[in-house]
Amino acid sequence: MTGAGDTGEVASALARIEREDPRLSAFVEVWPERALADVERAVRLPLGALPFAVKGPAGIRSYVARRLIAAGAVPLGSTSVPGPGTVWQTWGLGAHGRTVNPWRPDRTPGGSSAGSAAAVAAGLVPLATGSDGAGSVRIPAAWCGVFGLKTTNGRLPSPDRTGLAAAGVLARSAAGARTCLRHVLGDHRPQPPPSLPVPAVFSPDLGYAHVDPEVAAVVRRAVRRLVATGVVRLVDAPCRLLDPLEAWQAVRGGEPSPAAAEIRRENDIRLDALFARVPLLLSPTTPNRPHGHDGPGELYSTALTWAFNLSGHPAASVPAGFTADGCPVGLHLVARHGTDVSLVEIADAVEGALIAPRVVTVRP
View 1 (cartoon, rainbow, N blue to C red):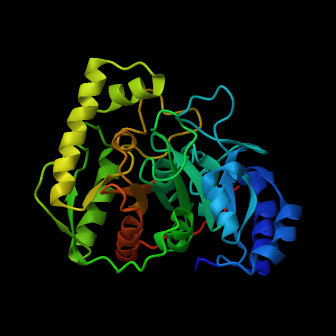
View 2: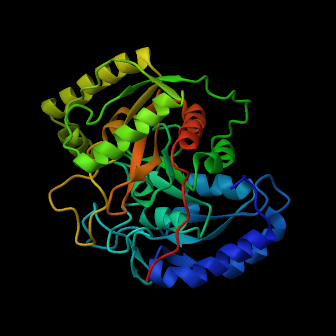
View 3: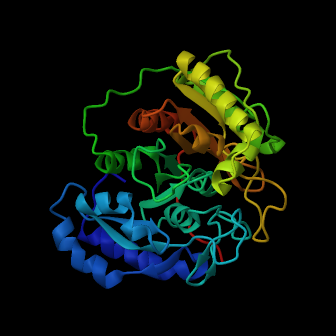
């Protein structure tokens, strides 16, 4: 994606959705008449009728969607999120049933931005909106092998009163999200390319998580390649956080406790110290690979992501590689508060050194 579309791109995207979505079930609704009617207006604007999808039935009203439309992007439909009564860690529910992972239809795409990630991974749209309160952009991005960004908490409007959820975007690559992100943030200042190598700390588990050994191995190989190609320079500094589970649940449930407050305060202190030394933290995005459609059991797929919904740091997932059974694995990039655009530039350099993201078609 180059950041601009045209009339043919909108029509082609609608045709792909019509052909592939009955098996993928990434969409709740599709709006072909509206999209085609909007092309003439949008094609004259900076994003040039770029087709995109919005997360969930209310996604068209989100701040990110409204900013993209104002810049000339064309919404094609709303994507799936977990259905009523569904445990929040599990799959999305689209118009044709449960949403499947384009790489492994027997596995979930992750959530809650399930359909957005699946639609981007399968090449139905080049960009989709998401929101992230515990990893809801980054987890499906990791499991579908695409780029996903959670912006700095509070930088963009969010309806979430807890302050945990932040707006996000999913795209085939960081480069594909760059121009759109600038329009969303209203930040068009010239951004120099990152000075490489970027000093970074790598933590395989953030000090508390239990990570699938094969997932950890894929991420370690990716980090070694980043070092070998001069994209990052690892700094020997610890990143040992306290498990944020209790703190996150207390904030989400509106039931504060002294123990939860202490976890959050201590993690903020440790992260402040880390980001005073380096601009980048690397880890796996998830501790596990995509699980089946019956759910993750007792495992928290959010174990490595929700710490940064509490702290508010911008964070992204980029494709790191695959497990032996064909499941995508994400590399998690976390940066200093407010450095969203710089983080996307770094993610672009990271992707350039790793396996190029691929577009898949859904297997029957």
